[in-house]
Amino acid sequence: MFHNRQCCLLRNNGLVVTRTVSRSAFGAVDMNDLSDASFYIAPMLESDLPAVVELERLARLSRWGYESYRTELRHNPLAVMLVVRGRVPFVTRLIYGFLVGRVQPAARHDGRELHIANLAVYPEVRRQGLGRRLLKEAMYTGRLYGAATACLEVRLSNAAAQALYLSLGFTAIARRRGFYTDPPEDGLLMEVKL
Image 1 (cartoon, rainbow, N blue to C red):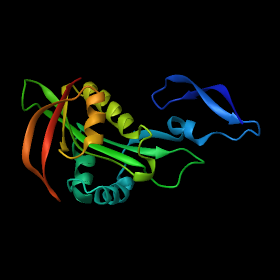
Image 2 (image 1 turned 180 degrees about the horizontal axis):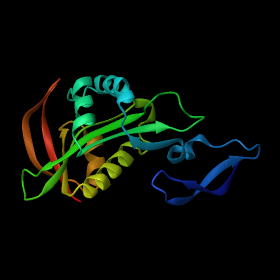
Image 3 (image 1 turned 90 degrees about the vertical axis):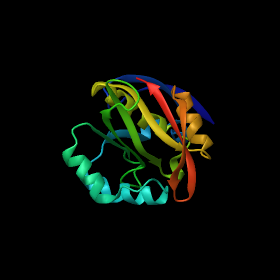
Image 4 (image 1 turned 60 degrees about the vertical axis):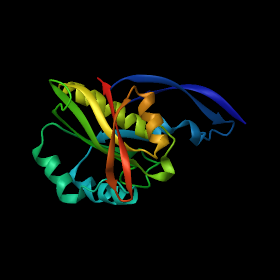
């Protein structure tokens, strides 16, 4: 039997959020209620790169590879490179997901845009809002770096990702024929105002 209890969680951005957590009569925490408390978003570090490259391979993303990520981390002050980390005692991996993007001159308007290049979450922690949290943090960071819009490409067949992007305000603005190569597929270009 579980009882609800209000608790306060301090998030990494300093905001205090009150949340209901279910506890059994024996004090056990319902793990389904802890997805926000179990993970946090952090800047990517060079020590994360082997895990990032492994997840990139597993998720069959557009290949950047270790050296490209390292160069971006070291030399691009407008890079937006984030990871999802687990909190103790929930840690079983170094990272649980990542997002890589950069603020650059906009292709379709004056000013800057945040181009989100890669986003992935491990299969065992999908459907817990981690991709959404990565995107929201990246969009916030992009605004701080002066971006007026954010854009990304998504596989035409990836309905789950498209639904996530639509729920955050992205709209489809173009179809990119043959954008993906492994396996070959068209991409959908999506954009949102920040």
